[in-house]
Image (cartoon, rainbow, N blue to C red; front, side, top):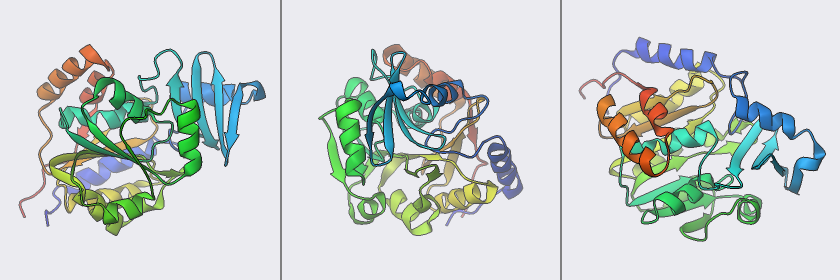
Length: 290
């Protein structure tokens, strides 16, 4: 087991992140998150509703379509003209794992939401073999009928907990975006689930998780579980507040110069926003020797 070093520093980083976040959901609203706040305001107009199913609502206005899950929860946003381009900051941060693990061959996505990652992969990474896991049949129907969920890839109907406990594949990338309404899924703080999740990674794979911890202790609990198996951890932080995306691997994060170079390469074909992700990663202190 790898030990922690500079525990006080890590606690301070976590506390600063949590204190800058509001309570909320899949992508939470803050005074500094204009897209989410704008969509929540627009969604108060009943004429924007195009579909309702099992507590979810699909809205459309001003060239955007979004999935609303209740409270302050915006689960996914899609541009009607460029559906392949992710718009929610949390989704862009999750895709920033490509900076750490470029040219992946296999990937796993837990929680499809509105299919933003699936559309991005289908358009920009067509050779990537992607498995998508979703428990809710209602979510799959909405993503298929209203969010252009691509037919490519492997779609598995199962809970994330059951899938990672029984699957035996190893993936170059694992994306984890699991929410129960306005709260991150309870399994994201469970040691057994996180250990099984880490076992799904290939030797130099990267895990990226979208979290909305209620406080510093909840974030630290998740980080401590991850570091038992994945000693290298970075937090993706944005100036507009909102969620924290945690990335982790058995291999050290490349230098900032290398990340920016990779971001520039990715920007040419897909996402200019990757440069901002590369420049905002907070690296946890180097792990102590076992």
